[in-house]
Length: 92
Image (tube, rainbow, N blue to C red; front, side, top):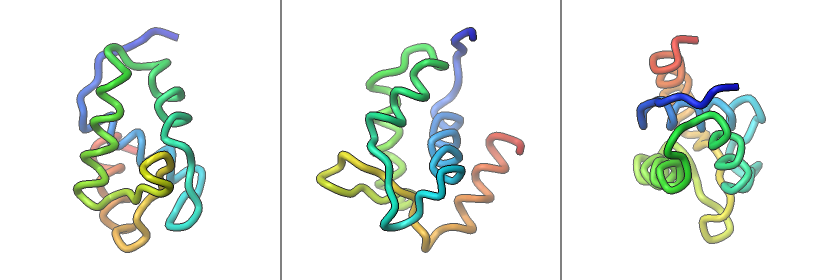
C-alpha cells in the first residue's frame, strides 16, 4: 500500500472513524499508541502530527483521554456531531 498526503481534518476523521468501528465510547478505550501505529502506516509525515491531532480532538471535546493521556475513547455526549463530522470529511 502506498503512503499518501492527507490533511489534518482527514486524520482526525480517520481517528474518530477507527474508534467508532471498534465501539470505543466512554469507558471503553484503546491505547493511543495503537491508533498511531495503525494510521502511520498509511500517511506521510506521520509521527508527531497524529499525536497533535489527538490533542486537538481532546481539546475540542470529541474524544476523551484516559490513564494520563495514554488511552482514548469517543465522547458519548457528542455522538451525533462525531457521526456527522466523519460523514462530511470522509464522505462515507
